[in-house]
Length: 100
Image (cartoon, rainbow, N blue to C red; front, top):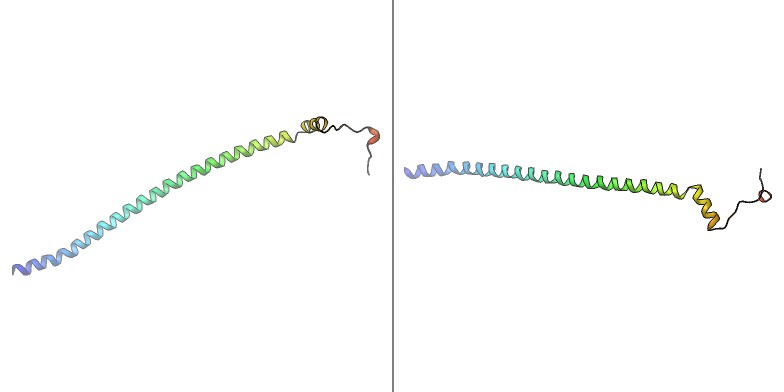
């Protein structure tokens, strides 16, 4: 009779243990999934910050290049280069031809 009770206790304890193991595994899986998603979120935040900094640097470079382009295109500078480096002079009135 005692053996029958032990067999019944063992039979009822196995499903209960299996349920607990499954529950613990499910909770651990949820914790790992949560930790992974937080790590991914943090990584994306760092990447966004890095790309924003890169964008700001490129915009500063663009602005600097536009200023330099304006300086290089200035008529005063171009006429100075034409006179000094190229030896160009203004044409005399007799040398100009008006085309209509």
